[in-house]
Image (cartoon, rainbow, N blue to C red; front, side, top):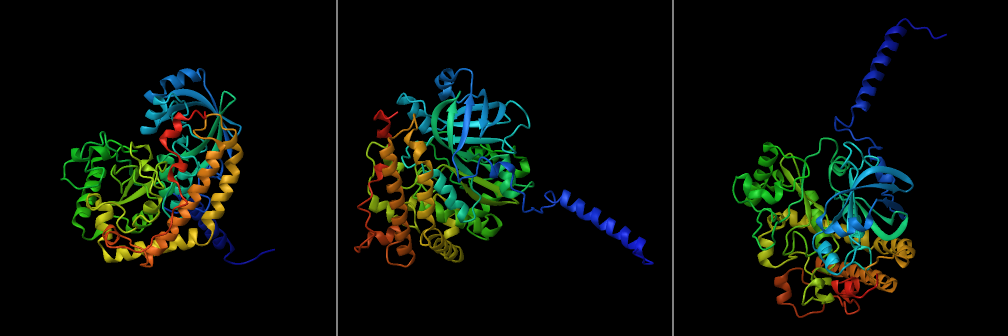
Length: 468
């Protein structure tokens, strides 16, 4: 029998300590303590990327939904995810140029959004409020978006989760799609914790406008100057939220003490992958959009989104596409755009003008190349993913390309990325020009990309080939 003259005090103290610890664990997330099991349930369910999942969309009149899809209006449906049933889910088509062209060519394979809480407040898929089903438009490899997000994740940039799903409609095969976690409340909580900041998706109303706010240029203290940012906020920003963002843009415009306005580490890591993917339909391209802007405590960072026209395929839908693989494989990593574009992109231009930031950018690029490519990881992961999805692509009834086109697309995608990594390494080592100015004065060799034919990655002309 245990005997001690202070036993009562010891027991009371132990009980008190246990209660305190229990309280801390209970409120740990609110206190900023993220437990090792903090990933939401949906992350290990639908977004287990090591297998192809299933989603059955059950809707009363599918043909009526397709006829109205260009309007992007929600319709109620039941969704069965890997055998688990969810009622009253909001369903609509998504996309801008892709949605328009799919309609124009008389096709019906739209990218889709599933919003679990659209009709029922608080409803979710194991904590996930919304996901997209990406149709692999202009992507014969089916790999662009998924791989870009994996690259971002490898570099420590908060990126949407993704996995492949076989979609059926009322039990009938519809095709292989990529499920993508939508950057909204669930994504913000998973990536930044319960006390996350504000999330925006800057975008223009008309590309023909100047759109300085999409480019993150400071144009004065008035809120109305930043409509393309605040109009697309994922959470309702308060006046204080708006003021913090405007002040961050003002600080950015000065080029001084950027650490006050920018999460420099995250932004540099983001730009490593963004530049590598030669994504010209992005902040570093003419359009200046296709990114999420995250603000917390007055500091800005960029988050990845939409890579179906990345890997040098942006021009392939234009009247005079540029099919110069050597140009894009060797695209400069230090000035990844024309001088005029770069000067109008302060989040890149002002950051890279700082010697320490520029050196850190090169250091992260070296880390990316050595760890993701030169280690063999990219080649192994890409091959494994292609093998996994190949049987589904082969029987995809709505595919934009043939199975042979898919196989060629995978080879082309793999070759492009490996050659791009070789060129980026040469640019880091000073063996290949890393700026447009250096290219103008260079008469030496580049990485040979003559084996790569960029249209094999998918172009708009494929839509008229009648594969579907």
